[in-house]
Each structure stands twice: as C-alpha cells, then as structure tokens.
Image 1 (cartoon, rainbow, N blue to C red):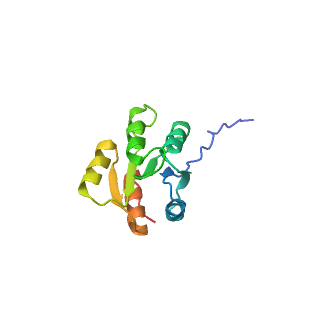
Image 2: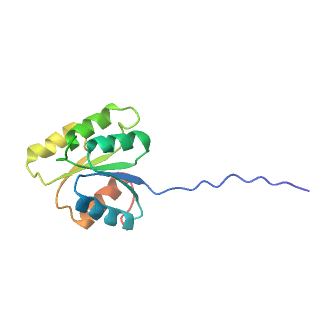
Image 3: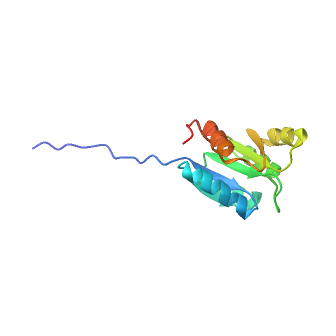
Length: 137
C-alpha cells in the first residue's frame, strides 16, 4: 500500500482594492466597474475609516478621493505612507480638482497616479490594471 501525500491547494484570490470616497454614487460606480474586472472591493467613506481598514486588511491598491470630511485624501496618503505595513500599497487619487498643482500635491502626498473626475469606465479599468500588472478585461 502506497500513501500519496499531496500539497494543499491554495486558492489565489483576485486583487483587493480599497475605495476611499465620501460620495456613495462614486463608490458604487467604481465598484461596478472593478468588480466586473474581477477585483474584490472594500469601501471607506473618509480617510480615517480608510486608514483603519488599511491597517487591518491587506490591500493591493487604494483609490482615494481628495475632498472628504474628517480626513482628506492627501492626509490619508501621508498617513498611509508613514505606516510600515501600508507604505508600499499603490494609490490612485481621483478628484474634481484639475489644476496642475493639485496633481503635484497628490504625487507629493504619495499617490502613484492622479485622475480628474469624472473618471471614464475604460480609463479607470486601464489605470487599475496597469497599477496591478494585469490586463484589462
């Protein structure tokens, strides 16, 4: 009699994305686009909630709004970059602010990319896929 041991099967989960935005409609819009691409989505309504979630859950990417109550996106990114467990999470910042200085401020705060709202479906899917090293669709 031969006993054959097999290695445990490990399930590979799709990337998990944290969407931090105070607008319910924006979070729902991003969720619909990204879940259709196979991503797992977690939401936060401001930077404080987002930071708490980022400290508890391992995220592959954060999508962050600039203007939010309690803690804005710039402050959130500064805090995210200071923490050893979250400092390397890629971050895509979105805002209705289109001034070049807003983009520079976002990059200085720790954003990898900055997109002006409204963000088109294809544009969001493309940037997210690129930041995660995946193909779109």
